[in-house]
Image (cartoon, rainbow, N blue to C red):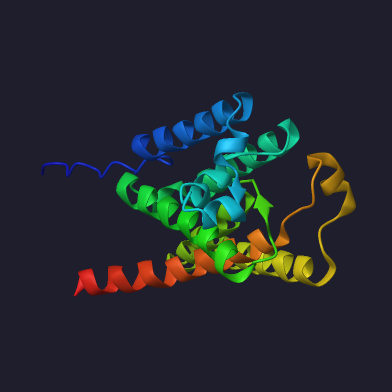
Length: 201
């Protein structure tokens, strides 16, 4: 009797997606320590003057080093929680959608928000999307994560962000961006699920 070869387990973090997260982290670091803020931050007035790139690049900038470190750490934690769900093309498309969705959502629905920087809105969307993938895969932690991120955003919309966090990042926490990011992540999760079902027929 010949022994059937055992299927190799999938790596926790596929190399292509890992490289993408490394690259995104480096871009955030470079933009933080070089004088690109005036050129790249989300500024509503400049966007209205057709500087459309600011819808995306504003997500890559940060108010100070604490803000940068917290968001990069959050990026890695969320990625490692859900890396098994992604391939490189899908991850790149997801981030493109989250970046554009964040910028456009703030521009369309929050006309009083004149300036914004930070990755946290995108991270809320990424966590929501990954939590839905967990739920669909039968991973129970997905339900807890999804409930947690929704509860956090609802709390922020009702009571605002904590003053200690605002003091740490030297700016007002844009709770609007968290709501837009969460909504974008949920919309893309529904879209992604529908596409997968269509392809599997």
